[in-house]
Image (cartoon, rainbow, N blue to C red):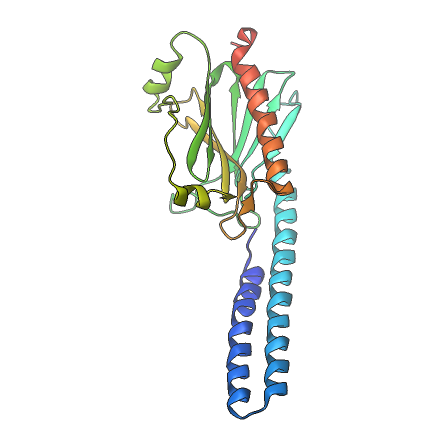
Length: 248
């Protein structure tokens, strides 16, 4: 999770190689090869150091924000967190209370000017929303912005109700993908679950299982496998909620 400190580390990390290259050119023009390569190596070392410090600073801020998120609890004393997942970007959280058959969401409060928060920040406040199992209508899975899977509650009137709240879940049609797009999508930048609830005020809730344009992950990597494991768990869990008619 970016912070002012981590952003400065990134700036220094990006600036250091430029200075190193400039120093190398300067010394080579004066036939000072050894000093040139020493400065070059040193500034590239600084770049690696600053980027490592940036990552560490972001992890510390994220840990603090997760602790802050945990301070927001549903008002009901009977609340029991059976399953929970916090978005990769710490912007949202979903929890299932199997005992009370409720689904809970944590999302950022609007900014003072009424705009939505697009990036988490330290001590960011959250707004909680609560739904019954029966209000879960559908979910969609997106990878790199491309819809990969859709699950709709198999009950009479579901499609009409989804349309009534201004949403739609169309069947997924297999399309030929160009070689260029295939090469682009070999690395994954975003994995999201869009959850549609029977709520006219806020029907859509998004949980990001992975989101990093700077660090795209390969589909055969351990990071992607872990993301898929979490995603599959929540698809199975929420699909069971929709399929079990005793929950309606």
